[in-house]
Image (cartoon, rainbow, N blue to C red; front, side, top):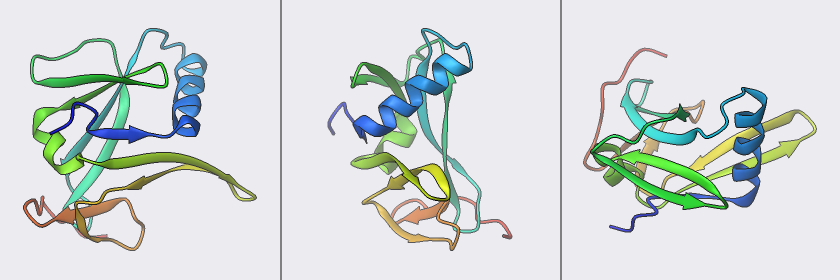
Length: 121
């Protein structure tokens, strides 16, 4: 398994750096994770942290420090995070090659080996 579990595009990295600056989180690292929930069983999480845990994979992309816990790593391996602007505004897109099913809203998924805990939509 590669240390760069998640692939950030340059556009996503720039947007996240802007968010760090806007939220006065200088020095923060980006945590990408998977948790149980959503109508397909698993959902993505992204947030800022200042500490690296013992079970974290820690890598850098486009000058942004990224953390993924080992439990989420196998589910996220090869996942691409991008940021796209459109006439309706901007947002992050997540393409996970391990997802075999996702919900209509696109924020929940399951893999062949991890079904999570599905909830009502």
